[in-house]
Image 1: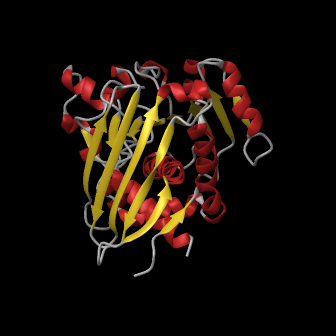
Image 2: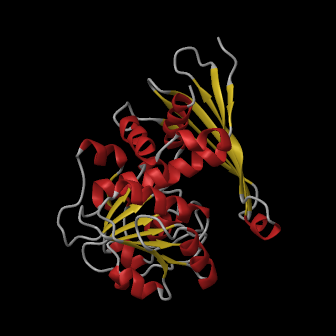
Length: 310
């Protein structure tokens, strides 16, 4: 067997593309359902997150990263780590992939696949909530897969951050501008995608107009939320994976514990959406997709990266 390859972000970023990443997730959800397991260690503001997955026919993967909130102020990456990719037949270590690369592709591709299944095809206005690294990926990924987009708005708590991201992304095929007011921007958007570190809701159901698709990314732990009870309870609710969201992530666990919704409120996950077993029922329906980002998605993307680097 050959030696495992070390694949860094800089080596691979020019050889992968958003349509390929989205298709890798779509194809992965046509395979037998993944086995997944997560482990969180450390305090809320400095967590070691390890996620493992096994998919029949695709192999095994383990991604281990640290998430240190204070690193941003120190000029250091908030998330650091690597992913081990094992081939399916013999369990041999095939590649070690820089986690930044896997996470960047996985996170945005996960959301875009959900939006392709749920958002109205004529969606023309994308609102990105948050102005971190993920925001830039979301603009690029949605732009690549939603050719009818006419404009992108970016909102952040600090207006200067939104303006900086909008300026950095100007000159592309779709105009990008900073939004001054979140509620007003959300009321005009066809798709709202939120990637923040919020621990209390910032998106209100009363601000979302009928037919909007809402994509929730940021809340990844039990004490984090981006959407309020009105939005969660008043929408058609979907997740990327029932196993890694329901009971684990505050976006769902908190309203379930409070009796606002039940677990059965989740109509489907990506396995259901890709198979056509679930989806939007009307043009007026508000759809919400919770991107929980399980290890099975990391494995699908890591295998795509490994194949692209051959």
